[in-house]
Length: 248
Length: 248
DNA sequence: AGTCGTTTGTCCGGAAACGGACATATCACC
DNA sequence: GGTGATATGTCCGTTTCCGGACAAACGACT
Image (tube, rainbow over all chains, first blue to last red; front, side):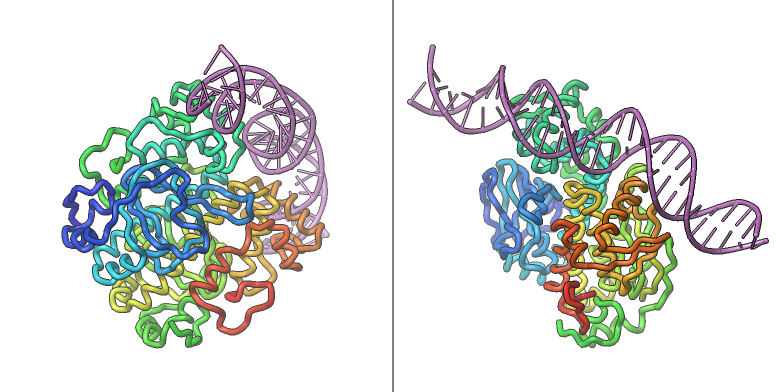
């Protein structure tokens, strides 16, 4: 439970004990994450779990072909393959790389074995599952009660937390899919936030200018999962810009 | 992993091995669930986990006072206190009894101890956590993409699965809170479903008449978590009315 | 400089849900 | 059988978002 900051860029790996890290290290494989790459397909057996180091991964819920929406977001603070951690071998959702980066990955089977060996490793991963569930709950809440501009502000903040940059690369079209709304709606909402001076929006780019303003614009829909993360997984490895959750 | 059907009315308890059941039995306490009773309050330490036997419990997400919505539903197929299972001591959500019934409950501390002792118990509970996460994802999806009438149909089906009765007791007002919409909207949507002959709606009562029709009305938003439950936790203890998930 | 695919900006009418108001219906209780 | 609290039915105008269409802007590539 100590946080030795063993040099890993992934926060979950970073908070592991030396012993757990030594257990994992030899089995971890560094790998690039390419945009649109699919890490988990619904109902397909999952081969690896990914500890994200940079970039961003979306968990997208699906039913009918036309019903799609993002239900969770994973950056360098988390991992994919939670169903593996929970003992299942496949996911009901799709997990797709949203923004290029890198990850350390581990074969499914190995993760299971190591979790059998180390209770403290298991404990950390389960606590992350809990935080991820909170994120999902809050997403359901925002989807049901939030206006488009509020949800957009929330989404930008969450992204901002999970990539270590102010400049995000994404098209309105893609954002619309993730938020489950029309592309034109995203365009208008971005203008609204830009008009308030909170962001700068150019072709395929969004730059965050005013985090505090965005939080205000999110109207209470942002922050709970991030606070839970800090409380439950542990505080940052060092840098924690004011007004931003410490893991960012 | 065998399903000895040891007589418990709670499905999770029922699928436990004899050994696990013997471990739990002496510590379980039967207790009534009264409507509106709060089993878990946000950020409050959780004293007990509840294995529901009858009635229904809602997990409600909250941020600002006015932002509330149901993010999960627990009946006799499940349990409350998932954050305990995952190693946290409190929940970000509120857990409230929606419909009267009974449960077997277990002090938080005891559950933790027993999970330390029995890996198979832990495994079963974690698989339920996974199913519950799927339920949450699908709720986020439905909230974001579904029309009110579709979400209402989905909700009625889910309730119908989780209480062993066709007659549900709830007011439009309450339903509106759970779905995160206006009360008047619920009234109109119920009429719509009633007009199609799918339900019968009277003061504080909704009777399910046509499950298949409701599934159609739900337009694909119903069924995934229920199927996951059957696949992951195991098939029913016996009765499985056609067209209804086997756990119901 | 010109071409072409992608991305964005901006229209429109219409559907869905909102917020508020008020009338009616139902039930528990005296 | 009357009374009052609770629940439901039905209006209204307004906001938010949708679905479709189309023009303009951008950027990569020749």
